[in-house]
Length: 170
Image (cartoon, rainbow, N blue to C red; front, side, top):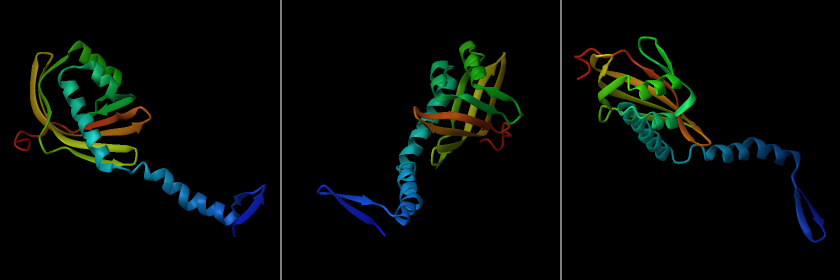
């Protein structure tokens, strides 16, 4: 039951215990989560574009753009079990340890899934590069995890498959 008090011509609402409980259980969670799930298609497009921008930055050894997109505690785990930090990737880009002819997602393979403030991008990536004088040309699947922060989406975790056999990668 709600209680109203008349105080100097102003009507003040004093919620009962039931009203407070209803507000806490039903209304507040709806109000706080509605913004998280607002415009999921827009969020998916934003993250898709950011991931494509990241792949282009890697291809160009653009350490500054990579630095803006990667979270400070970023980790990449490869299909062979190697683990790389943000600092390692940025340093490698600055030194241009790898030169890329291709570092591109295969058209139509990118899929973005959004869960609140977390997004996962999966895609088939074609890599054609030279590292330490050794050429490489292969495709692999990757999953990139992004988290929405107060300053925007940040790439926090990446995992790449082993290179696909040539017959499967075409």
